Structure formats: structure tokens, C-alpha cells
Length: 314
Image (cartoon, rainbow, N blue to C red):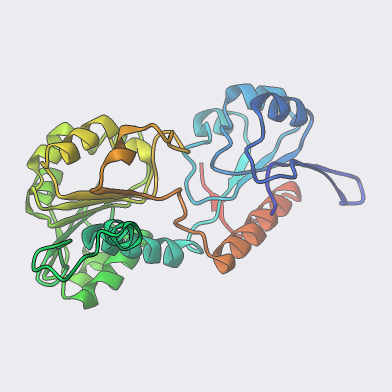
């Protein structure tokens, strides 16, 4: 896999590459040491690229390419000040992430981890009328926080399940995009109160950090299912834990947490009504391979002062 790659370019346009050749995150001190003098950097969402890293790189750094659609790990203000270009990988991971969101929603609402556990531990004794009953999508209301590319792709996949009504919230209405699902733009408190399923797909910004908190969960139905595939910091996890523990909401499915990885001692992992995945939204072979190619081409284009396949405009 291409990642944490430091690039410098010779006069003949050849690249000298310094690579952190393991899937484990590069230690901070190694990143600070290794980036010195680089003209380009290919990083992952687990690599925090802040002022200290940029200072360590020096004035030669002209392009950063991230193997992600999210850019919350990049200090965009500082990067813009220095005139550094940024490449990212939108669109290509939309379908894979939407598929995972639907899988996580169904896994959570139909209590599949519990059911599998009962089969393995001998809890399956006979058929019982109400044993392991969950919640279905037919005639339900689904609320989507952030009707962007991924939010739309999720709605498109959920619609054939017989969802009766789609709600969405965000910075502004998107009537053209919403028309496909007859989705209604509503305030976030209304979305929380009226949705049977809440799916969080918004970007992490200063406005969305901690958006789903105690007040939000208190407004939700006590049978509602909460799904987060965006970023962990959009959710106040202590408030979510209390909401699940006290049955203020029915269940939660998370593909993202704070921190990542989540410590095995974290209280959320003790709850049967909480399903947690290790941030695998885009984890298909095809998607990750395509992301890698785009990220590499973004970097090379930036080094040659050419248009990038996918540039994040600052």
C-alpha cells in the first residue's frame, strides 16, 4: 500500500521515495524526522499533519496527498498559509461506504451480533416468539445528517426496503438531490424526534463536532437506532453511552469512534445494544486500490504543477 511517502523530484522529473513500509501508524518522531526537506507527502487519515509537521518539512513542501475523503486530520489553515496544495480521494469510496452503512444498520437493528453469540454459546434452545426481536425498515422514517454523496447513496440503497419517509439536515436545503427520495429538509431536533433510524454522514467541522450529544439523544425515540459512519468526534460518546445504558434510544452502530482504535476497556464495548466496527467503511479491495492510484496521481500532478485528478480546493 502507498502511504506516508516522502517525495523529492530530481531535475529529470524522477522521484526519490522514502516510505514507511508497514500498515501500522508511523510514530510521530519518525514522521517529523523523515519529512524534512520533502517536496511531497502522501499520508493517511491516521496521520495528523499539523504546524509542527509542516515546520519540520520546511519550505520545500508543495503538495500533500491524503488517502481519504476526509481532511480533518490536516491543518488546512496552516497549509493554505504556506501555499501547499492538497489532494484527496472523494467519490471513489462512496459506494463502498454506503454499502457498509446499510450493512451496519441492518446488523444493529436486527441484533445480529447478539444472535450469532447465542448460537455459539448455547443460548439457542428453541424458537421463542419475542426472542432477539429487533426493528425493521418497512414503513419507517430515516433521518440522514448530511445529504452529501454518501448520504444520498445510503438513501438510494435504503429506499427499496420500504422506508416510508426520509428526513435530512445540513447547512442548507438540497432540493435537487433530495427529490429522488422525496426527502424533507428539517431542523436537527425534528430529525432526532421523528426518525426511527438516524444515520450520520456529515463531515467533521467545528460546527458538527459534538453535534450528537445528550440533548440530541434525549429527543430521539427510545426505539430508534443511531448509526455513525462519519467521524467519531461528531458524537459525544459519553452521552451516547448513557443514552444506550438507560434505554433512551434502542441501539447504536458505529464505524468510527474517538479515539481510534477504541480501547478494549471502553464502556461502549460492554453494551449489547452497541455494534462497533474498526473504521472499515471503504474497505473493499477495489475501492482501496483505486484510492491508492488517485492519491499517487494527485501527488505526482502536484509535484509537476499540473491539475490533480482530485484536488481539495483551499
